[in-house]
Length: 337
Ligand SMILES: Cc1cc2nc3c(=O)[nH]c(=O)nc-3n(C[C@H](O)[C@H](O)[C@H](O)COP(=O)(O)OP(=O)(O)OC[C@H]3O[C@@H](n4cnc5c(N)ncnc54)[C@H](O)[C@@H]3O)c2cc1C
Image (cartoon, rainbow, N blue to C red; front, side, top):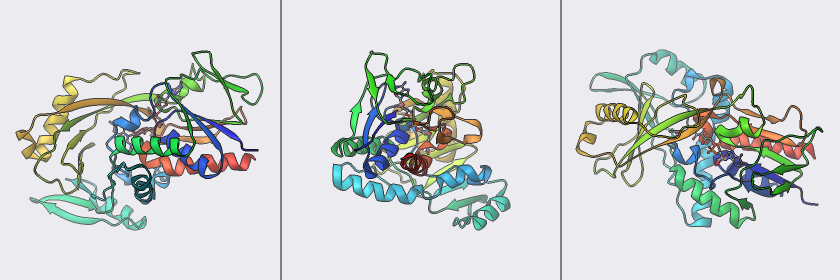
């Protein structure tokens, strides 16, 4: 008999987990307290790489490696199947005014990452030619369409209550509307809200970290690559739109936007690309990253419940980590029988 998996959270992590689960023949129900693909996964910049990979633990980088290739294939499939183009581009990333250049170059060489040394007006820079980007809101829209076409049942605007059972497995999920859902397995992929779903009231392991971005309109000038400097980046989409981000703020579940962030992002953007002074900011938004210690997510079976799996806490790189993380979870479920 086909086994049923309920995935709690329809961000990129929940969607890609569902993608692998249907590939393995599971029946999948994807639940979301709002609409699928409208939270952090929508708000992000779409860069498919850690920003300075040499500053992260191997655990983080190992989860990120290979994601650009996965998304290239996925984009081709989604374009064909849904008519929506997620705009995968291998734009490369320029790291402007790098200070630990030799260390970074050594790390790249050791990890077989192509890197080039360049100078921009006498400023030392590094160029990583194979860093790619994807237009994440379109990716999520296309994925949602694809998953529905492939029989994933989407239940939106349904908030799952904190999970609790006296046994070592969960019998059913309860929702705030009183609807109960039974499945064989449950995957928590609830982003910044995961600790609440996991009933970790006293010691939440995942906490929201707000990130704000500003958007310039489609500009005439071409930004040939992603530019990064001091924890700030500029990304240009295919139609010329430029994103500048992002902030890192520990302000709880507050998704507001601030003048302070707008001003600081604008200054950094105009320093790196002075022509942006000729354009007005078109939009500003924020998203809540699922913050975890050192960006290391939890991708594992629940310590108490044998039929609950965690795919949570991908912090700054959830889009990049989602393919490997989802593969691990779908394999663990298969191993469970
Ligand atoms: C400004 C910004 C820039 C970023 N840039 C990048 C980048 O360039 N590259 C990169 O790799 N990453 C980036 N990130 C990080 C990335 O967006 C996140 O790590 C990733 O989106 C997390 O995915 P998720 O599916 O876990 O969370 P989310 O996308 O937040 O999805 C979680 C879902 O769970 C649902 N949910 C929560 N609680 C419940 C409940 N009780 N019941 C039902 N549903 C529930 C929510 O409604 C939500 O839809 C960025 C993030 C931000 C904010």
